[in-house]
Structure formats: C-alpha cells, structure tokens
Length: 462
Image (cartoon, rainbow, N blue to C red; front, side, top):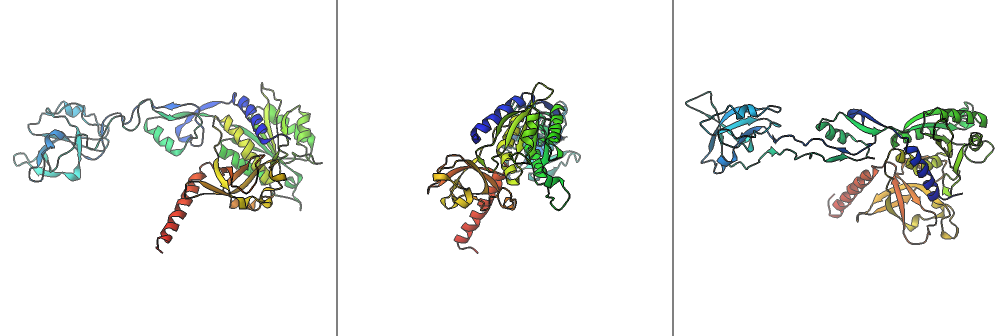
C-alpha cells in the first residue's frame, strides 16, 4: 500500500491532465452564485462615474459660507433641481442669478462641473440643516438660509471613489458569492465567465441496498456524496446501484466512460478484495489503469483510483470509495474534493493548525500505534474551538467507527494526523478542515460569544 502523500500526488497529476479539457462558459450574472471564476475580472469603469451627492440637499459654493452663523446667516437662491440621472449641464448654461446661487440636489445627483454665475458648486448641505426664506419682492423666488460654514467637498462622492477603473474585482478560482453580484451589477456587468461544473457520475453498490427484503439497508453514501459533490461545485448524476455482478458492473462503467458525459466517475462499496467486491475485476475487464488500490490511511484504506479508456483522447478518472459511510466521507474529503478543486482551478484547501491535547491521544481514539509512531495517516472527525490567545484546540470525537454516523451530528471538522507522527506526552499540532470551508467564521463567533459571556460573569455581573 502507498502513503497518502503519494496517492494525493497521483490524484493531482491525473486531475491536472483532466483539467486541460475543462470548459468555460459565460452565464447570466444572477445565475453565477456558487460557480467558479475562470479568469481575472477587471472593472472597465470607475464608480461613481461622476462626482455625485451623498445626500438630499443643496449644492452650494463653499467659499461664500465661510463666515455663516446664526447671527450672520448666508442666503442663497435656489435656481433649479438636479435629480439622480439629470444632466447638470442644463443648469450650468441657463442660470444667471443676481444673488448667491445654489441648486437643490437629490442623492446620486451629479455635481455641476462648471461655475454657475461665477461660483464653483463644490459642496452639499443637507436639507434639514437649512431653512426657507421668503423674498418680499418676489414670492415665487425660492431662497434658503445657511447658519454654518459648509466645508469644501462636504457630502460629495468623488468620481472613482468606490471602484477604480481597471481594479481587479474577482480572481480565477474564487467562488461567486451574492456580494460579488452586488459589486458587478453596480458597474453594469450582465454575465461572467466561469468554469463549467465538473460532470460526475455516481453509483452505490451492494445487495443490501438494492434488496427490498428484510436485509435492506438505506443508502447513506449516495445521497451524502450527491450533496457533498454539489457543494464542492460539481454537477452530479446519480446512476443507481450496481448489482453484485462483475460483468454488469463493467458494462455500466464502460457505457458511462464512452458516453463522454462525465469528467469523473465515483463508486461506493465493493472496493475491497472480498467475495462480493466486484469493482477491481470489473475495471480489469475494461483495461483500466489502476493508480492505486489500498492506502496507508484509516479509515478508507481499500480506496481505489484509476482511469478507464474512453472513445475520446483522454481516459475517464474513477474513484472507488469504501462502503462504510465514515470511510466514504473521509476519502471524499481527502481525495475526491482535491480532485474537484483542481478541475475548477481552485487552490488546495488550507487547513487550520490546532493543538491536539495529550489527554485525547488515547488508543480508543486513534487506533493502535506501534511504538508510539503512526503507521497510517489518520482522518478523524472532531470539534475545533478557538482559544483566548487566538489559537485553536481540537478534540477527537470519542466514537470513530467508520460504520457509525451519529457522531457527525456533533463534530464540526476533519482532523488529519500524518503518518509517522510520534504520539508522546507533548501537545501535537494537527491539520483541521471545517466541514464547510466557511465554518471557521462560525467557530470564531462561538468563541467570542462564549468568551464575552465568561468575562461578564467574572466581572461580577449576573
């Protein structure tokens, strides 16, 4: 059996070859959430395009308000209104006021670029900070009174203050989120180039799943992997349950490989060397190249990876995952997910490094460790939490049987303990992967809530 590191290297090599055939597509912006960006996206415009008002108010020349006060107010004539979308040039060329001019302006209205009656309109004062004045000689004339100085540039959004022309907004490998849609839509983008989702064909196997008799067992792996693959960014087709028949299994695998409908095939169960484990004989019938079958990992050591010849220029990769749900979940996380990420042009997932305390390094948690040295790479589920100093501690779930699924309800991460780690009395640094990549935010939030509550109690508040 080969090591996990060697196996992961082979997975990445095949994924890189498969990625050469990966396709991109332009899709409507509103449909892009969850897709992966295929190339750097630079803004072709600056926002806002013009200097605009941040408030409903009046555009004024700040220079004439320097000495404004309650005792010495400044009175200006309202010479027009600029709404959002209006061309301020219409006012610039038609106003000839014998008094100090100003313009009513709505939020988003464009500032005049040319002087009006010789005054540069360079600031905005909010409506509620002004009062109306009646002109005894001309009741139709609108006048406002200012009782404080207005600073140059006040409530004025400068062109390009939000998004710069040419600014890099999205990078290849980023997963599109709703907030990205907000930014792109604001500059007029209507579609975006993304990687097409990898097409995955998925089977379960086992007589106990297919039967309807007393020995029937519900299929946990099929629904789980369908959901997990979709969450990872793949388009999944569940193709059913294999019969316990090597010839029929080979027929279905060949049909899928030659259809050119799939970038990856995955089976669960039937991957070991027992009497009813038919995956390896089926693949041999098809002349498949086996990259590895059996790894020094726990759980999931029978896992298989290879490629099946197809009608196209490239073979179709296939993973044979173990049937035990815990083993299937572990091998998906540490082998299949990296493969999918590579096809999508996404970087490898970065783990959180956490301290595994000595009291958790027990045989009941980790399995037999000859001479204190790990002969296998271990994948365990557990709970990670943040410490007051900003570090992380992780606890391994007590029950680690790959056939049991209840512990996953309380766990929030995978823990990787590399082959060769010496399990002595010292604390051990381990790599942790939250079940969801963004769970780290929730973990930190839970810590902050708990820490603040504890501090409140210690301080004597109840």
